Image 1 (cartoon, one colour):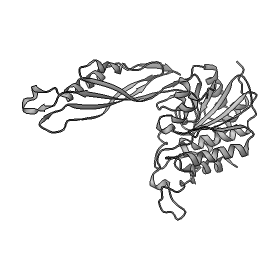
Image 2 (tube, rainbow, N blue to C red; image 1 turned 30 degrees about the vertical axis):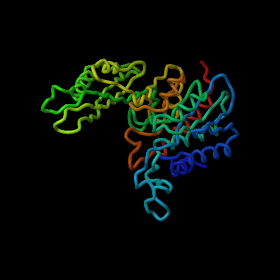
Image 3 (cartoon, rainbow, N blue to C red; image 1 turned 90 degrees about the horizontal axis):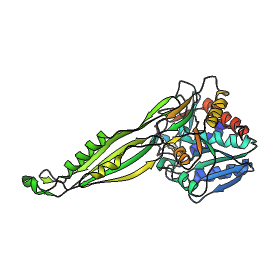
Length: 367
């Protein structure tokens, strides 16, 4: 089976609501094509291991995708049917289809590299569920004991430093989404002083958010800065009623090692702050590992890859927080994932497959 064939097979399997069919395919393929120890856990993660050694290298991906566009799903007659297979199209050296870039193409490359490599240490390939909804599979696996010392996560790192180059990302931002709830006392607007205006309290909290300093950190010659953005506001019940409740949402982009002091808004009268989602950032703290991956990546492409950073959270954040040294190396390009015409370069898929294989063949690293 070629890389294109395997990618096409994976991309065609619907997995935006239920990853079971994709997980069945992965488990069956690994059992048929390798002699590895293959497991399928309670949430649907598929993990295969081969080799032994004091340190483990994991090739990590996910097989869930975001909901496809209507044009990306069709039945055999060409009619739109969201229960049918996803459409996969090959043209101009690229594969088009939901999940081709994010990230079944990279997963296919990792599977073939895992099958073909003969490492001296332990090599793992892992495909998680639920990455698109907050890292459900990665968190379950970590809680269940998944703890490789090193990991290459196949999210996008192509065309970051320049065109036609697949870089090695050594850090990315996280995302913390939170809600500020301001409570007051309702009153008729003609007697506004009889109440306590929740919107006024909420706007005081927004002012506090705007005053907060956001941290930054230097990684790989870049300065990664956090960001706070008020994204939604809702409150009030009528034009002539002093509002008793107002809710504000905040999107925060976090950086490795620090975050803004958003908890300070809760010091204001009548204001509560709750965290709804907290996707951790990632930074690789093992320079030797990052440099080795960069050296291998440099050997499989004409361009000169660099150590770079990513703006988006990935499962590498959960692994990094649990103690795994991670880098990101994959075929997806900026702006390609989640689009109605999502695609991936076949040449870059081959590049990633060869990088994963060569890195696995060098495992464990000589330090």
